[in-house]
Length: 287
Image (tube, rainbow, N blue to C red; front, side):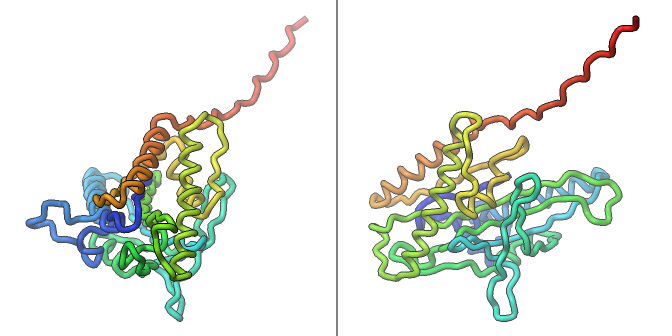
């Protein structure tokens, strides 16, 4: 399953994921209305609550592992693994025999509680930069992957699952960005390119069955492919809108994007049936 937040720069995507605390520490439940909590914490709480019930019912023990990475200027960088110089280690995206994306070199950490999850997220150093619209604008797409599977010490195997929580970088038009910084312009161009590739994939998924889906158009769509296709795949989009009247065009564009995702959810092509081998001819009748 996958949930991604889409919207213009400064519309609250990172706050939706992190919460009002910015992911620095798990927010307290006591005296909280729940609005202060981000999706990372809410999803983690739900997962560990379900695992507790799962274990209480005498079912196999399940383990949660987490991977956290960003896509910046066409590169995949591990947010939980740095080299000796403090640079994020690069992750390679490769396809396996089933054409599923594999993240080679991504470090996965085992977590036992939502507190451990939030501390890992707080330790990550995502690429941000000040722009004309946002002082701490995210210049990369951040993907948090939660893998749930059988404990390595368990005797009975259980099917695994993966939840991807995607904080997309903000879409922005160069004419309105008003940035003289070359790095900001390059970042914005790369972000818009990857978002356009994602839009093309969503458009193809909401079209006629059997239509080619250009998942290889960008690293972002390669990584998110398994959240869109497959019999057990589910995808949800959070549309983030800015309340200012100067953001009207951005808001309309975000809503059109959301409509495409809605159409994709209802009209996504079914997986192609597996061809079966023809039945052997009947034996000749005895003379």
